[in-house]
Length: 138
Image 1 (cartoon, helix red, strand yellow):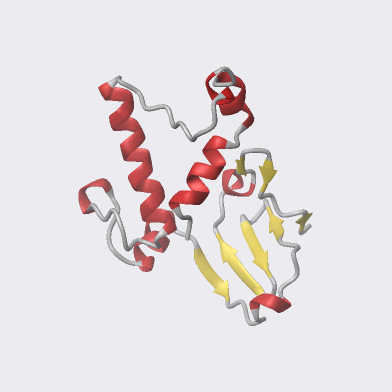
Image 2 (cartoon, one colour):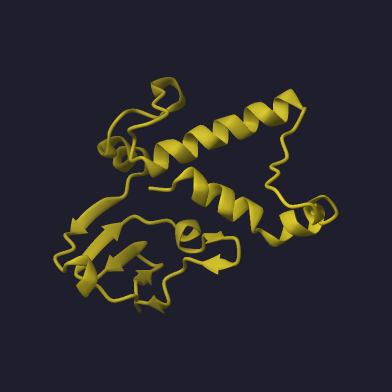
């Protein structure tokens, strides 16, 4: 689960944040900019609720009207990803390498397969860290 400290860490260590607020960061202490624009604030709150819903596997920020039902199953149903083959290896035995077949949109994790996984999920990057699986299945 993504905790608030990790969110703050990602935001506050992002190169654009430190570049933009370089002058203000000369004095020690954490500062998180908050907008006075109500529309922008509401947009950020909406995104934040979506992120919390995703990272708590549908247990927090539940809102059926917004398409966020309670439960892990709701995540699967919403995005359509299905586990075709169970991951049978224990986490410590899984390699660091994931494979992805763009033709079938299949993500392979150890002995497990998941489908359909969209290309933009594979291409996702947080900050400068790539989450793209290093290998591709032909």
